[in-house]
Image 1: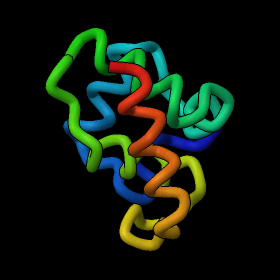
Image 2: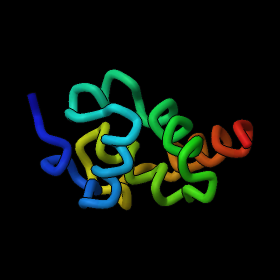
Image 3: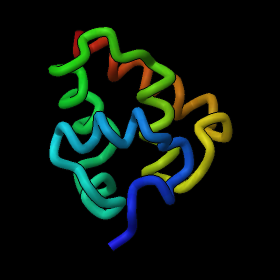
Length: 84
């Protein structure tokens, strides 16, 4: 099992938020996917922002969120707008 803090973009605050939704390992995060993890996090924190969503996607992919392609960022933004 891979610990969450070993993934890019996941600092102590985001790790704690993931623990609240019962995600404890990198494998669990990857299995759930960034979209479902973010929606679950928004239940506890309706103010969760797009940057947090990008951070989760980057963690799932193993890259810094800044390296996400513009196309993927647009997909994530559209997903978020459709799930308000």
